[in-house]
Image 1 (tube, one colour):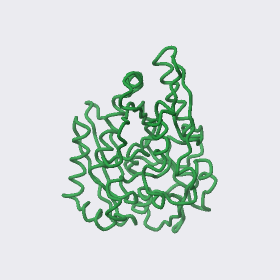
Image 2: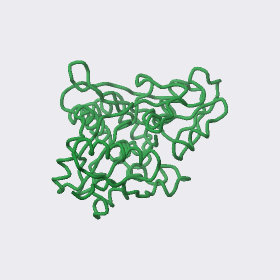
Image 3: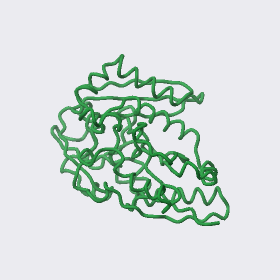
Image 4: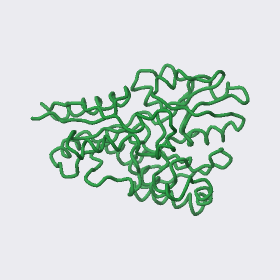
Length: 318
C-alpha cells in the first residue's frame, strides 16, 4: 500500500495537527503508512501583513489545497477555522472528508487576567472577533495588532496586558500551563471551527474517502457543519466580528450560539438555536440575527466592502 501523503503548512502547530491525523489513520487502517508534505502558504510568507490585507480567509489553505489537486499530496490537513465557509470559497474537485474529534474550543489570555488588568491596559490580538467581545466586557481596554506563530505571539505580551491564543493551540504545543485565564464560551464565543481539524481530499478518490471516514467524529462534524452554515449564511466580510459555537445537549440535539458585533464592541448581538439538522440550524440562526436582531445593519455598516462579502469572518490565527 502506497503511503497516504498529507499536505500541511510548515508551522509547528500545523505539523502537529497533521501527525494527529496520521496517527488516527494508522490506528484506523492497519498497515497504512503516512507521509507529511510541507507546503508554504501566502499567510506564511507574508507574516508582516494583516490577514485582511492579504485577502482574508483562505490565505492559509489555498496552496495546501493545490498540492492535493495537483497530485503532490493525497489529502490536506487544515485548522477548520481556516477553511472558507461560503460556496464561493469552495474548491471544485475537493471535499471535506473528515472532521476528527474536536479539541478545546475556548480562547485563553496569556499575561494578565481580564479582571486584573488596569484601566487602559493593552491586549494584543489581530482577530476582530476577540477584540469586539473583549471591548464589550472591558470598554476601557486598548488593542494592538498581533501576528506570527504561537511561540512568537506568546513572547509579545504587552506590559500589564495580555495576548489571546486558542486553548487548542496551547494544548497541542504543550503550553496550556502558560495560560493566565481561559475564557468561557459564555464570555467569548469562539471562531467558527475553532479547535477542530478538517481533512480534505479529492472528491473522486473514493478509496481514501472511505479510509478518512473511519477517523470522522460525528458530533464534531455536525457541530462544525452547523457553525460553517451559520457563517456562510451571514456572508460577512473577513474583518467583521462574528463568532459561532455548536455543541450537543444532553438529549443529543445541536445547540448553536451565534454572535455578530460592531468592531469596537459597542454593539453585540448574540442568540442561540437548537435542532437536529446542522445546516438548517446554522442558516436559521443567521437569518434571526440578521432580520430580527439588527445584524443586517451591522453587516451593512461595518463590512469592509461588497466585494469581500461571502468570505466569512475567519482568518484569525490560533
